[in-house]
Length: 165
Image (tube, rainbow, N blue to C red; front, side, top):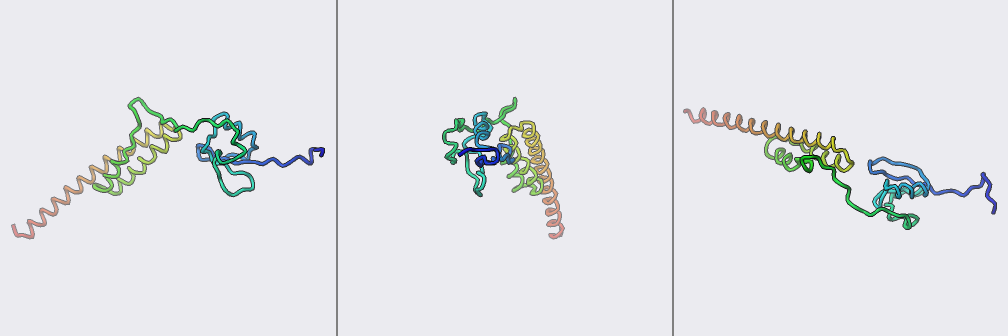
């Protein structure tokens, strides 16, 4: 069979979900293999083969079984000079349950962002989220303690007034 420019065989195309959560492609198999060689994709990268409806990992595709996949390792966690970036999650939960629900929930949201930002290599964003989680923990703690003291004083005064003393 003689191939002319008008009768080239169909090349299967692929879409891939990058580490940043964005979808890339469609690209040919050769491009996908190049991304693997460059370390831009690994065993766990999600791939959608053209014409299929199910996303699979690269490791599940037989056509990529011979590709030189980089070893599967946990992503390095960026650190700052003070050690690991604290997320203040358990403190946020305690503040939510024991002190002040609204401020505690805000602290939990920022605490959850710390790990997410670290996983994508955003060290500055993780440090900022950590600082905000800490700040909202303290605000919730102080407001909760102040509210409980004021409530206790009001109850004490009400009990004294009710007993006639």
